[in-house]
Length: 602
Image (tube, rainbow, N blue to C red; front, side, top):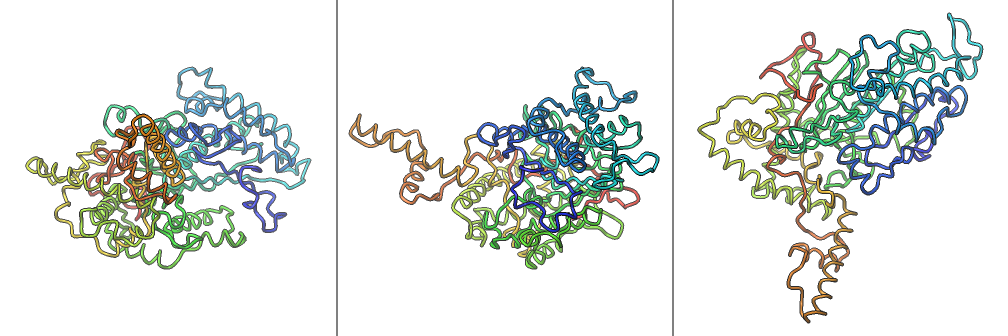
């Protein structure tokens, strides 16, 4: 869609041969997207990042572009211009109740509240589909006869491929369901069966997902505390039982982060209570959330020194997804792309070697046709991650500050990493005290999948191996050091927290001004120094250092998720097709391809 991405992202190779290809990029929540009235700044950015605000408007905009692309191909113009699109996205409600009202014949639809009101989105879409039909119907083939108009071509089928990462994966799942509902409605309006768009048959050939995180509305950031029991991140359009389900028939690959830790980033598996269709595959990939879907720049946290990112772990899932998409028929032709795009798919052998060395110590891997359960794989990966953090604790003999990646990091990153690991020391001390106090009560029994969302149930699982497991091999420690970022160290939940170097510099400037004003006031009124400052001693020291250097000084940072409910010693929460269902497999249960269509492999 013109205007969303910069011009240098346009397809360059032999453009005339690819006029029937259309792409629509939807910027993520908390990012600027002027087409839907989102400037991505201030409170809008905060709500976008914290609650997924603006996600519904983005999905609605994508639905509009699906209609527009058919019109553009035949007429060269938009059916719904930017002004109309910007208005429509805020009039369309994409809840499951509105989607239930999409079919013309709703005899089997589940009744919902305010059904008449819920028809509003359907009425909007019917109006525009009918306008689309009026414009493109001369291009329809009726009874296999040549259509009245054959320029620019006779269209036999429209193929659709969809990709998304994080909340973008959540939006991709909801968009897929909504677009299918739109295409079924289109077919009904044309008197056809199945799915059409603009009267032309439609096929969804691939859905590629990187680590789906919903967290729409308020997420489950507080465990089983009061607010944690109320909110699960499946608000509004991100309904786990409906809009986020993977539709039958579509080929889907979901790459899952093995080492994501933040409680605010629970995973939504594509399985439904552990089962999925034969066209779906869910693969557990080493790394945290943005190691899987990308998001870290070279040198951040001292990881990745190649300016093109060829030594970053994110290249592995990128290539994996690309290969799966090409095999599914998605026309992503890397061989015809620009040189800069090709460089961004390159991966250094050292990355692959280190990953393979790490995988060699993992036990939960396929054995012929027998696959470990998703739960088994995630528990092993969590165990290895915790062992790494334990090895790099500040009070250990190999603290994180001695790693090569830490030494390469900026002061901003060093501050977050060291501060997070000092919190880890407190967490480990509390855990070991709790373990001693409860030694007589605990049984060496595997905890239920999901741990009933209780921190102490997670601790009881960790206690089963804490004092008996040998140290992590050096090859695994190096893999984590060099390639796996620390998502918890960076993640700040306070609205005023400095979660980027730019924000840290602004905060330091504010502290310098505060200190200057307080010192000036004290000198005027008392003729002496500041006796009581609104800044802490550490903030005063940091402000003075920044005033001298103009750079971020070494200092302690705060505002991460509380370690007592969301520290390093925990397991990631994984939903499986329902708000109340956490991913499960019977203890020790393994599945075969014929018995279960789950494809979770490390």
